[in-house]
Length: 100
Image 1 (cartoon, helix red, strand yellow):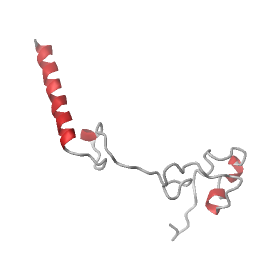
Image 2 (cartoon, one colour; image 1 turned 90 degrees about the vertical axis):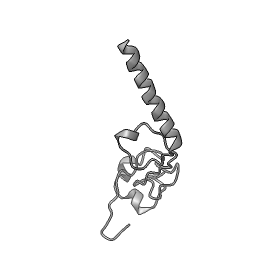
Image 3 (cartoon, one colour; image 1 turned 135 degrees about the horizontal axis):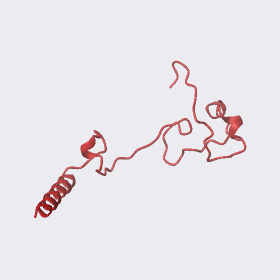
Image 4 (tube, one colour; image 1 turned 120 degrees about the horizontal axis):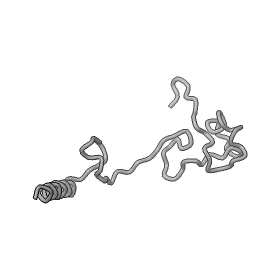
């Protein structure tokens, strides 16, 4: 009997949680332990040394042989020159004071 009441209570909690999530849209911001499992329609982009603008699908596009952009040949060019496009060519950049 006790197990049945625990299962019923858990089912009620899940039902209330699903109902609350469907009525209140979640934008992916303000993450906490209470909403880790929620899905959002947020669009994310990663700005990194290999994708300075955060464009969709442009990570790992640095070509160590053909790319003449000084930001892409400054640090790991010599180590990745035989790998070609699509590999981690530029793991870091040096940003001088005042640069953005």
